[in-house]
Length: 368
Image (cartoon, rainbow, N blue to C red; front, side, top):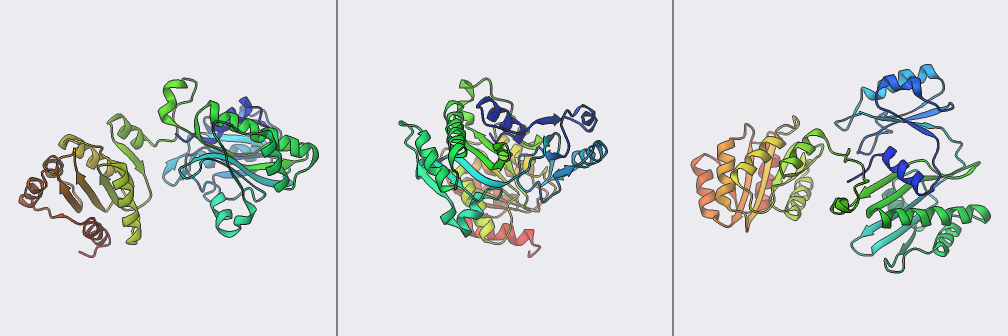
């Protein structure tokens, strides 16, 4: 679960990480209650990136401008996600920006990153200037040492009291990751202001598997209404911004399908994993969900059946009868029965995922 910025800021406060004064707006009328000093930064609270480029971050200098700009942001959709909350934050004088994070990593298990190039995506820094990234593997049994925080702080060019403050911020951020069982804790930027270091933005990703141990965690506001509906139906669904709907059985297979669609020059419209042993009813529910996205022009269904039965998948497709082209790769348990069911209904099934994906991309582009 990815927390929204205002939720991350609350956790930073709880763990003694300095943040600017702020106020959460639930609607445009709340601007009259903002107890902050101007200038103020208004920031759309959405679980997607690129809000600044989309106009979802605005600097305002007086109450009149605050009212006007807040109304504009509340009327926005950023990458298809409507803005329901806006965070008002007192603007700060920024002398320098840093990056700081801890994350779970497949290769290193637990990684500590810091950089003097804050305020931009860390992936961009890694690509263009990898020498600007301080990187250390953390032993989860030994934990994080403030001494390592000072080593990183020196790498950033900090000295004296600022070096000690950075080490304390890093230590508290690690405590947050460990105690709240986060997968990622990130401050970007960690700004140097006339008053010291301050977290101006943050990203926290919580491990949903640990929710039963953390009743204090806030509800998941990162899901779109359709994603929430899919979760309640037992389907793993993530909306994306493409035109080819992707459905499969097994997360790894679906991820490979997304990569293949992208490799062929198209953009996936979603990730949808029906799970093992999917019934025909689950197939119909999955098709209904992906077709609620008006951008979808074709469907790529990739089935490698083990527990799942190809004949059940085929019955679900035929009974639903998608109104747009569907390209099916089907192999595994009851493969012949499933292919025959599709064939009698006028659908073609491929044994190769590459061929099926190519077909889905061609029909999406109007090539067939």
